[in-house]
Image (cartoon, rainbow, N blue to C red; front, side, top):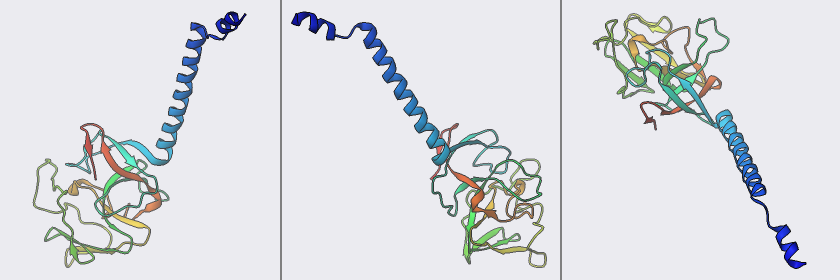
Length: 205
């Protein structure tokens, strides 16, 4: 009698396979849910469109963004979108943060320098190209059309709180905060900070 009860309690191979499949399905569902949460609230994927961030980022490269409770800082590479403006730009843009809310930016186009709150900004990422894709000695082919002092060939702006002043690393071919169609970027429009380039694999601090 006891032997019969023991034999009945031993699971069959079919039951073992069913239990394994159920466990695997449960693990898959939980993993998928965690990934969905991560890519909804913490991480985002996007692709570079255009040449404004050369030679740091190139057209077609895939990027991973960090967005959860993110607060932009100087030198961060960010992705953002523009809203409420008739600027002809409907896609997301990727630029570098030069200054944050409350800081004053001065660009001297004759001396090719940027100062933020009176201190020289180390512009080590910038490249200056002309239409032939060659490095040139001019800081910008076209002067900005807002807050530009033609007499001194400078641009001076104070960034409003909650906004950012951004530039593309490819300075001669970038629509950014020097352009009246973009100006200051509202931090609420920032999708995240670029932390990783997938190919070629590069980590950004």
